[in-house]
Image (cartoon, rainbow, N blue to C red; front, side, top):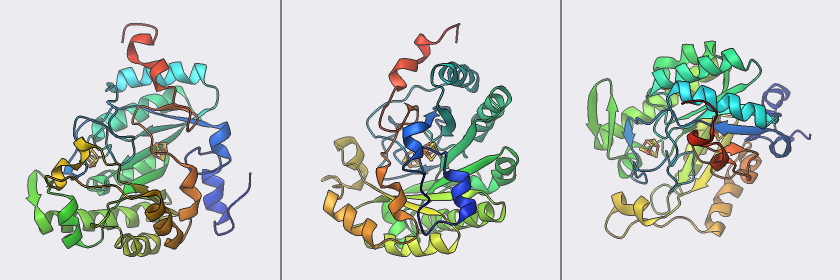
Length: 299
Ligand code: SF4
Ligand code: SF4
């Protein structure tokens, strides 16, 4: 398949078989998620904890939470049925790095059974620096960090609180800590040769103009791709922004912003937001075929 012009060879080598990153690969390779990480260490104003992490999923759909053991059985079953399965992702439903024990146990167990599967994780970055060496040892070669701001004043409008090193922080202080840890995450991942994609949620009137500045910061810290996703405005997702809720961007607003972003931002336009327990080729969600009660054996 064709390499986008602006992309270095070594980056392309790592992503060309990854269905989330390559327009071509997503027709031939499949990825699945297992929802093993329910706990989260921050509160995003657009999140409703009943659902999956809205950072890398379709809101409004409850995912099936699995223990690492159940996840292993599910992945093995799916790998037998879906020969194109090439990537296992953990994207929640909370935060994969905060709920680290379960994420690590799942990856370790699956990598032992299926040697050539690529491991992928998505996180808000707050807890990532604590686990980056283990991530590098586990052969996770892609990480997605969701970064919605680089200015703590703006961050305070998006994140009412964070929980960091056994303490709860609020307001601008919380957003500053989150920002510093996110930038540290990018630097630590780059130093270990792990590819980083950055996701941003576009929230009109809050961070829409600011995402150009975010784009600059994350490209300087080596993110090979910056993917802007629209806030999906459902009544349950607007409540924390105030009584009137928060609208999502129009298709035109989103496209206008994506056109202004640089450095591989164009690459991800085929990508749909996907669910924490999604299975299949992108755009062809087979998650419902592989729910726990349909798997063989007692799990
Ligand atoms: Fe919700 Fe994800 Fe934000 Fe955590 S990081 S509050 S799960 S959207
Ligand atoms: Fe794709 Fe993100 Fe899942 Fe990785 S975590 S497989 S990049 S959707």
